[in-house]
Image (cartoon, rainbow, N blue to C red; front, side):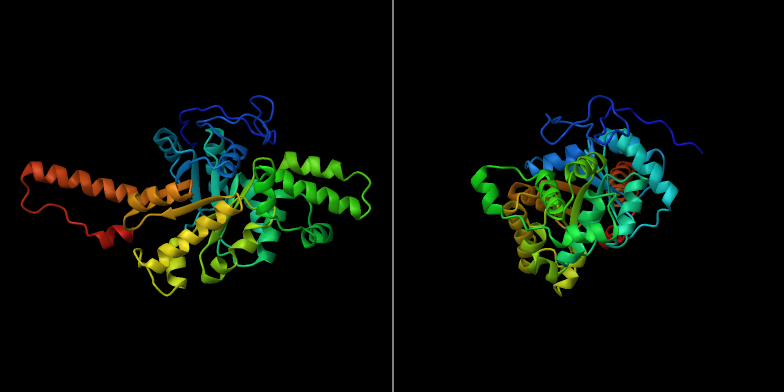
Length: 342
């Protein structure tokens, strides 16, 4: 069946897919409210502006309309833990993009070829799971920001990228943008004998103008290398995977543990230091309290809960209200642990 046509919100696509007007650049004025493009989301994260979203697991064609009406500016689609076939993922991404809610897709594994495949399907943002090394991160930067280069030429460039010094950004009063990446790429190619490197860099800027890259921080090893990962040009932010992070620290689902909360504080601190975005996809104990506190601390990508948990929570609330008004002596029961398992 053809997906239902949801509420339409005009959007501009910087890479020319659906140009409603002249493509926006990172120097262009950015809208304060959706509809947004992928470039707008990246711009907001790098300029320390808030972005609100949720995780969508439903493949119903009615879901995008509901998300748009909620006020979300971005949507998180998780293919690491949710089975979504390629053609379904593609129409979901294309529809969310057309509605001005850029889809942020977590790939099953941090593999460059899978990343380029998902970008071709329509993903605007990429979340790379379980990132721990500089080598992994550089390859993902190549896949999201330096397409269509591959093979030896791409490896040559990635091997020569220079880490960003956050102090230099502070001193110059600069905002971290993709220009820092492309300036390095252009110089690397020029030093290698390319007589017109500005041609390929200009092409890559246009082709990848709406792509953004978040590294999923989910392990002790990743937390120990945060500065090295954040310094790689082309990285737009961190997203914390709280469940795996707690397990990797040996404190599974101990959400109030000082060790767990300290790790998240450290991640936010490094993101702020290196002028990149930060988000926590959190849907567990004290979620509203924690997300508000983390947001104030600098975690401005607020990825709130997920559709299945929100449905379970709202149903529990509504059924409790109805059964109490009915005087039902045997009202519906659903424990907190059951909700968490949905």
